[in-house]
Length: 141
Image (tube, rainbow, N blue to C red; front, side, top):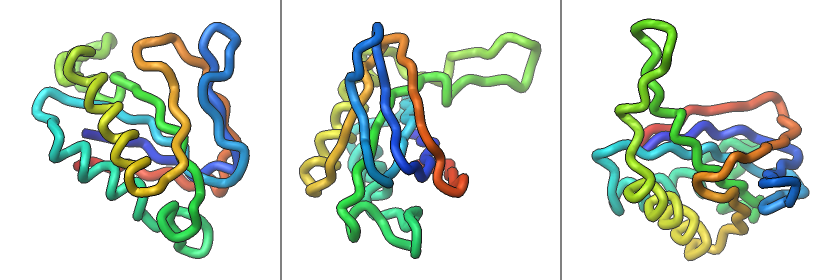
């Protein structure tokens, strides 16, 4: 499981012109990808890492500050680009595997007390964000 995590002042995601998820205060925008070998253990580890990572100002985390997260699925994080000009998606999990694992990460974050907004799995989404820093991390579990 892989995530690109950006510290943001605010962020939102729209589908078909409708806002489906947003955070209106400083927090984390999480672009989340799933690969074939991922399962419940990786989902639990990713949720813990996202909640506890000290990526906010003053080395704080969402767990210590209550800052929100906006989680958006993004299979392209597993795009292979080493050969040729066309990315290969063979490392990305199929939707029937990935969707429940993305939902599990969100559920586990909420179980930890996190405030979480989401995108819509499989949809064409418009993601807006105002980066804070900029401060962006790549997390693999």
